[in-house]
Image (cartoon, rainbow over all chains, first blue to last red; front, side, top):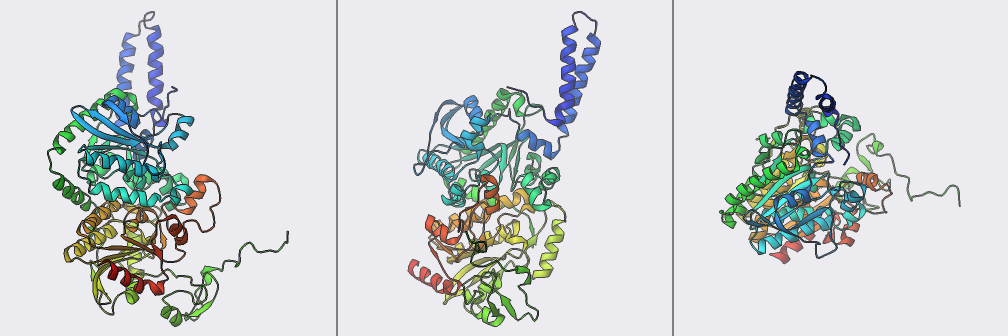
Length: 316
Length: 279
């Protein structure tokens, strides 16, 4: 796969290339010292760049084309995954995948929005944008989990619910609303993880849960920075400012009390090391599951309704 | 083909000039009929000629839906705290302050209890004029408290939506109001308390994708725009013109998302009938 270099990563990439070239000659020339110095410089630069990421840069990382997607996590984290299809009403929405799986000692129902890697797979997955049947498929799987007393794990990664004629005809709004309502009162634990993009109602439609985790370089908000820019600034050019104004990164949302926990990513982003990322997430999920399965269903539901009830800031 | 055929029945009138000089007359934006304000009010702000429904606010709905002087407002002065210190071309706090000053409202929903034909109800009604009827923390909290009150006192609940969706200027807080209000509605459902959602023009975005679509009964005003994505966004995405009447009340009725359409003049009677038959 061709490497994607984001603009702010260019200086690092250039130094790394230089280092690579030097390595080729290192047996013929005495440049050991220079190399050590350069390596140190690369390390420092990386730390500097990745620690000081702007909100827009994090949005870019969240959309990185080499970033792990839902199925990558499912395959890396679980054993004996059985994928289940369809909403039993209309059809199977390929923008969301889900099924039964074994995660450590836990049998779970796991699902998430699925993006594609290239044009063909992106068309197949509709770029991770769900239609109403996708939300209804998710709900069917959650009801299945409830019936067999299995915790639910959902992974959010979508640029939004699909805005199309057919989506409206089949009740995109009703499908999302129904999920918010049913997820609030589902009698099994729900863990939500934002693994990439969390765009508005399309993401929240599978995002109500007892614990909300978020990978370090993701975004989650009411609107994408681009759309926000186009509406409020009446131009597409203010996406950086919009990203800043929306305060949409994991650290922002932790401060706002909207998420519970940030899952650290490998230096440079989740795409730098898929395995390490999946291992970190798996460990966190098992910890959360261990705690959640001890709570009685009625208590779980009451606490979940209260949890969302506390979100919001106002003056009286 | 004739050269001068009009593509539509009426050339759409200039809404800017709707306000006629002496302020006593209103021009119907749909058919152009000139109506005296008093007459318009008596007709509940619907056109005498073409039944066009004006976009009215909570004050007006309360005036004709509830029994006279029965409305007790809750949390009237709750207002936005601007938690993100949001600023686009203008500061959000300034937008809020201006809206409050201009409209004598503190946010985009009015909530309270009242009587309808002697029966106690909980009523929430949105005000589109307040930043596009957008839902932020205040709308979410006021509705959540209204539902709590309805749950405690076993009051049938009516929410009238007229909203562009979640409020951008409160970021993820606004988004979470969808979950907050929807979660709270589960309590009414478990207790068997009826919830009637009235959808008016326009009801879109996060408002439709939460409480507006979670009623036991969905009543829409005629020809209201109701949907998730706005027509402009859909048009941009698919690159095609949208079919006539798309996302209008009549379309939603046909597709199965609305129980019935009610002329504003029949809304009170219809709500009374539904409640009588449900309780």
